[in-house]
Image (cartoon, rainbow, N blue to C red; front, side, top):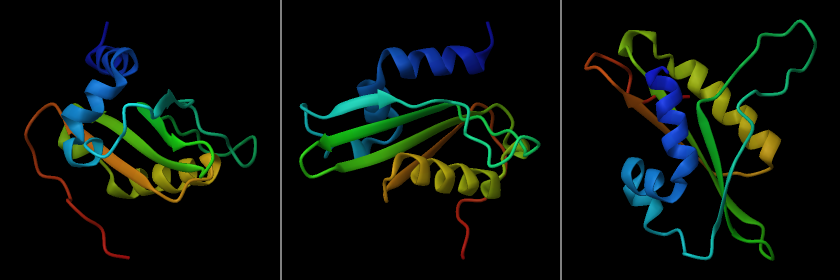
Length: 123
């Protein structure tokens, strides 16, 4: 079994603990009554021949069904920092926000090895 699969399994088995570990600041405001639901890894394609995108572990956190408050956490694991693309991450975030109809996305990237990678992107 690969590191990638172990990473995904841990997040899916322990979603609240994973958010507390990887996104501590954001997780502190998640109430105990919040519902945490894994979302589909494969993103929908606009057309049949379009490029395929797959997420590691997207989690939808719903605070209140009445107020429709939700935040989407996208947890991505990268073994090598050199393979990370901040542009690809932005595509993931926008596509999944649109699919889940939420305006708040928290991207979290976990690098298994040290390396250089961009910390931000100015639009």
